[in-house]
Each structure stands twice: as C-alpha cells, then as structure tokens.
Length: 195
Image 1: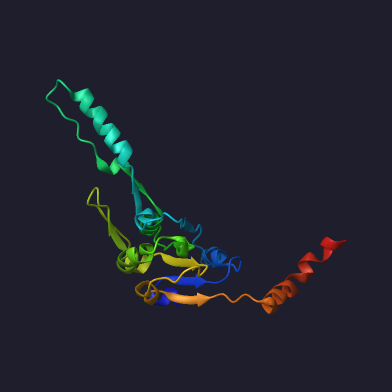
Image 2: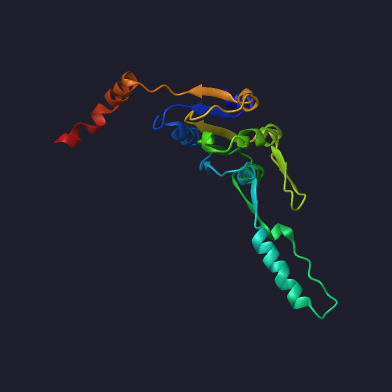
C-alpha cells in the first residue's frame, strides 16, 4: 500500500518484533539492496538525514587561506560543495537517478528524536526534494523513483498528527500466540541441535 500511494510506511510494535528487519526483507524481495539505514538518535535533526556541512573545516580552511593570501591582492574562493557530505536521503535520490531503480530508506526509531524531527521531514518526504542551504543546490528524485521509506517506532511517545496523516501505518502485534506460531514453524530447522 505504501508503495502504491507513494507514502512512507510507519511500522510500530514492541522492541524485537522485527520492525527494522521488515525494511531489509522488503529490499531483498524487491531486489533493491542494500537498505539505506538512518538510525535516529536523541539529538538528530531532520537535516542529518539530508546532508552534513562541515562548518568547522570550512572556517578552518578559510582562515588558512586568508593567512596564506596576506600581503597579496589575491583571495582564494573556497567551494562550499567541498564541505558537504551526502546523507541517506540524498544518497537515495542520487542512486535512483543513476540506477533507474528506487532505494529503500529506513528511518529507524523515529520516536527517539526531538519532537520537531518528524514534522521537519514533511516537506522533503512529500516533495522528494530539498535545498542545500550553504550552496543553494536543489537535490531531488524523479517521482517514479522516489525512495521507499520505512519508518519504525517503538511508540515510546506520540508522533505529531500532521506527520501521522502522511504515513501508511502498520502495527506488528506481539503476543504469546504469535511466538508459539513462529517457534512451531521453525521447529524442524532446529530439531538436530538438541542431539
């Protein structure tokens, strides 16, 4: 359903239910491995999914350039593109354009991020494009090759409503009956281990 409507798939469930593995399995079955995995942290911001600009190295190089140019009338212009590092969503866009096939992008444990993180991704996930602020470059993917986005959540906190409205939702149920079914289905594989 998520692929058909072009929306991210939000997968929830208790830890250990296979939410993360669902993205890897889908990539395997669709033949579009490897998965681009973005692990959300408590200090993640939306831009971390897009790109990283190395401000410290840029200012360091600019300072060294100024020191080298002192006494001359020449000034060296630094190319800010040299200080931009692609991250998962940019890689997904570029890979799709190069290979002609979409990629699977996994945004893992989104509920660990600060409250604004999901809402800050709405534009990028909806339009499938973003602008690198430092260079003015616009990065996008063709709509027909947009990444297949899996988002996992342990439901540790409620996600914002505008974000939830833009996702296809699936909850993985985990109970004793399900565990018994899984064990029974794999019993033959492990029968020889007890010998």
